[in-house]
Figure 1 (cartoon, one colour):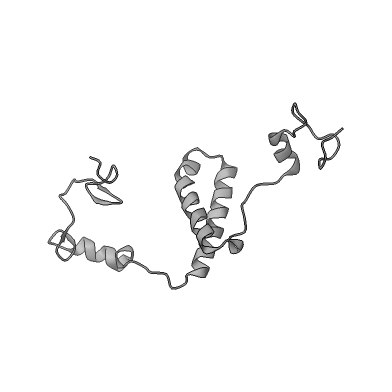
Figure 2 (cartoon, rainbow, N blue to C red):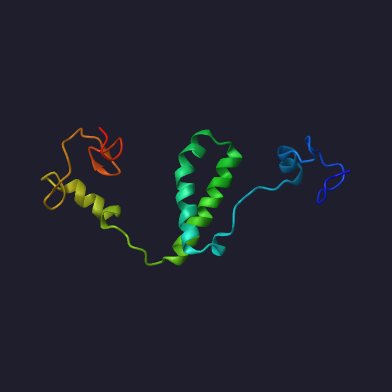
Length: 137
């Protein structure tokens, strides 16, 4: 007899629990998460942080289906963020004009009075000389 809530004839492992792989294949469902428009702002940010953190591994090691699901979920989450924040702050340095301005400075500064670093110095997301993380060499 099938466990309560499962149709008769469903494959089960010892203990009467459905086999998760067979259940996924047979039901044809994919976990896509909560609709982004139902998340509060804090939950939306947490979801965005998580999906951006897992992006690289999914791209390098995920199946085509996993990458497709990741793309779809990321697009939905980012779209919801942009819908809620149409006037979000845009850093001048993250625009084409800002990049051109940095590249065109002959004095080797990113902003007036701020040295960019020596040529060949690794630059990480925390600034010059932090390619291995803050405080690491």
